[in-house]
Image (cartoon, rainbow, N blue to C red; front, side):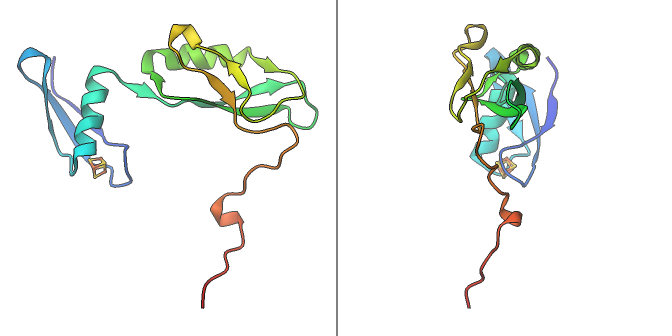
Length: 135
Ligand code: SF4
């Protein structure tokens, strides 16, 4: 296996990492500015996982699509099968944030849950709220 270069996504610094295979299944990581980058690179080379966010159809006139998220990172190879399964998923009202939409997807132990209730307002982004500056 050859060396692989990619960007660390753990923090906004975005270090360019290079992982080079060494003897007995070990990896030499270069380009990281901290230990978290080393752990990220090793995970990417041995067991890459992703947290998945998406939307699912609902039977609600108030909120026709509801946002969902995995409760933990899932193996990268399962990301597209999961998204495909969510395309055919539909939740029925009433529903609430935290309700499980898919349980133990493909035996991975990963659940997908709703992150918004049918009648709740979306949480405003920080730039959408009034910020009162301290004087
Ligand atoms: S290696 Fe460390 S400093 Fe660099 S992007 Fe990753 S977490 Fe941030």
